[in-house]
Each structure stands twice: as structure tokens, then as C-alpha cells.
Length: 217
Image (tube, rainbow, N blue to C red):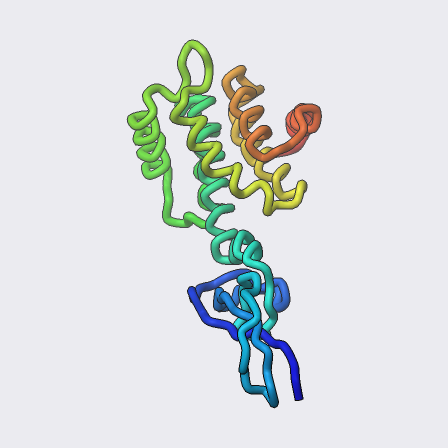
């Protein structure tokens, strides 16, 4: 006859990665108040309850921190942007004079999902990045503009990628660097920065770069 149950009100609707369903779903972000109920009818408010997120498919209720997990669609977009930025960074580090390096960078961009992005578009993006941040490399190494791009593309992604996935991004950069010969100092600097942004241990980065020199490309 008597019981206590919350009464919910919806604040926001949106999309999220549902931990219960294991995929992208719609959600309701809600706040509520506990009510003393008689025969199912609320008769006396007792106090607020912590806000939560309810999946509209499985009706599971989760903490608002579940919204911090990117949706599958968003995660895919973040990964594409990361691959694109790594390719630009490595092309900037090694220069655009060598055809093999340009082809490797463009191939990585297309593999990321930018099928219509050819060499002209990649070089134009590189020129635009240089225009925004000054020279991509100066006498002191990587410039602020390029470093900012790497941090913006890689650091938000790193917590959501397993270590093999983060290592694969680093190796993508290594393959571009090695396309026209051995690592240049600026290429090593860029790869080290990529490793830091991906939260990879320094020793592991060194081991991966050394192993990449023995891999067939």
C-alpha cells in the first residue's frame, strides 16, 4: 500500500552510448524527487534524487557521467580526424619534396575515410595550417600551431582507445616518415609528440619506432 519511488522530469534529450545496450541510443537526462506513495499515488514529497540518464530503448538508468563516453559515430569521427592530423604532421615534419612521402600521407588520409581527398587537398590543408600557426617547424623544433593541432586531435581520443589502437596511430605516422628513407630529426620529434598525446610510454614509443624500420612498407 505504501512505498517510496522517485518522480522524474526530463531536462534534455539527446544521443549517447548506452552502457546497457552497448551502442548508440537516445537518452533522457532527468532530475527527480522521491515521493511517498499510497496505492501508487504520490502524496508527500521527501527530497530530491541525484540526476540520471535514461536510455529510451532499454530504459536502463545511468549516472550522468555516461554522457562523457562518445557515441560510436562521434568516436569514428574523432579517429578519422586523428589519422588526418597525424598524416599532416608527418608530412610537415619530413617536407613535401619527396613523392613517396606525399603518396604515403595521402594514402593514410584516404584510409581514414577521406576518399575524395587527393594530394592537392592535402597540400592545401598543410599550407592553411602553416598560415594559421606560422612556420610548422622553426629553429627550435615544432611550432605552436602544429603542436596545438596534435593535442586537439589526439588527446581527447586517447582515453577511449585501447593501447593497440593508439600504437597503430603512431605506426601510421612512422610509415609516412619512413616512406622516403630513415627518420629525420624533425620526424622523430613529431612522432615523440604523437606518442605523448596518445599517452604512450616513452620507452614504448622508441621500441615501436625502431620496429617500424624493419617492417615492410
